[in-house]
Length: 207
Image (cartoon, rainbow, N blue to C red; front, side, top):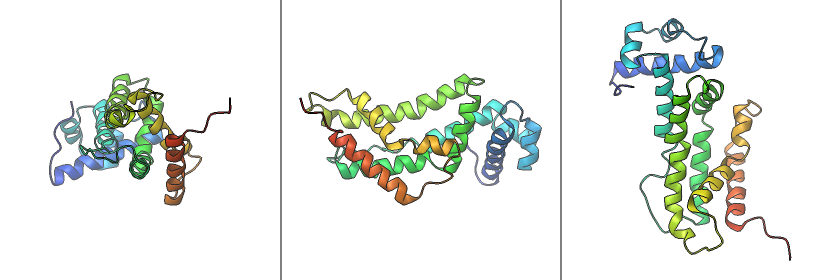
């Protein structure tokens, strides 16, 4: 289990090892990266690595925990009248997309896609404490607004659809390296269009 984060120089050494592990897992693959590789790249020591992370799996777990503690906790504890309004959904969507597309987070996602079958418990940790947790929290925020819409799906389904609409194909294109970086203008435009369709629907054909 990952230990509590240290302070000062200990924090810097820890971060150097996380950075080295992320780079090497992408360059060489999780299976082919050795602890010696990580120690050499980070200019740290094997004893520090064992003390902070315990193992190579512990390093990957710490990278995942870093994402799930910062990227997916976007809703906070706030509740307000604008939960389901256009401005609120655009603001939340912009924060969500920018967090999901951050280079370090894309890097860890690529590692999990490539290596998740080798470490399924860490892939499950990412999914359950990341996307699934965000969906549940968002569904709770949507519940009251959806209670007056008899033809709407369940709050959980609507939350999944909203998050999927926000990412669109921006995420998969960046994961695949087809687009190295999306501009703020591109992200803002995509989010505005996606929220508009989410709120209005694409329209039903005339009967």
